[in-house]
Length: 155
Ligand SMILES: [Zn+2]
Ligand SMILES: [Zn+2]
Image (cartoon, rainbow, N blue to C red):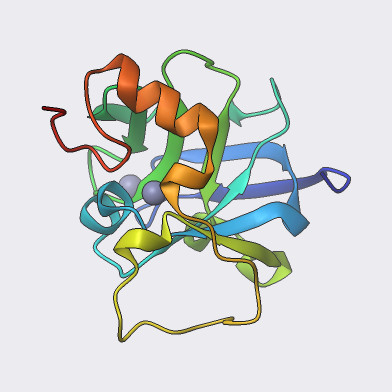
């Protein structure tokens, strides 16, 4: 990981505001179906948060459980989707970079969950591409829920 730096951000309507320290150089494009569905875009770019540094300075987001092991935090008023959070490791949090006040400071470093990458969505092709089943932790988390690495029910 690179060094963490301070950021601020918030939702479209301004109800949710936060500050955190994030690893700007370790953002990734996630092409999983949960990111596509919950954000409405072909891939979400998210940046990891340094453990324990995320602080909401106005209202708290609401959370939706998007998979057996993760939640997505969103603004109940305007619908902006701000946060991904692990249920098992609450310090494992990432922020949707579009909600940062200075998203231009982010430098994506890789693509993940590329098995569901849309064939017409090609960007930063020179970065490493990883499938969900390249990540043993992710495979284990899905298996624990009785599902394959992409959320399908195991036979
Ligand atoms: Zn809002
Ligand atoms: Zn994803």
